Length: 92
Image (cartoon, rainbow, N blue to C red; front, side, top):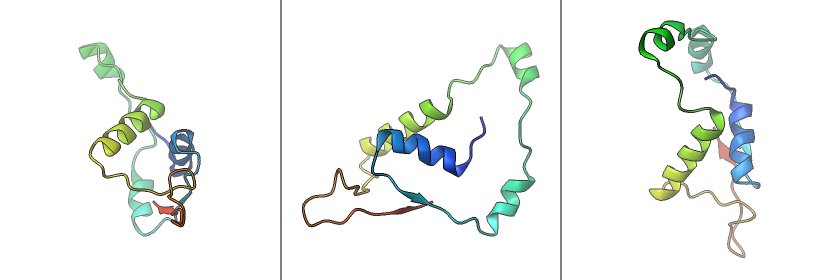
């Protein structure tokens, strides 16, 4: 599975309509750019019958469910902010 930061943000926004994501690549982007664009899993599928269990949608569903479960996600959006509270931009 491969996705961009923008694609991830769109999928999160599906769950959290007020979600705003800004990102600025830094020196670590060079490392990510050096990785293969795609991993060939043909042999794993053939030899072991392996198949991916997650796509981007399922990944984000699972991630947000577990973040909420452990009360880690404390992002205030216009929809979740209390009166007088400001919504937050999330820097990724």
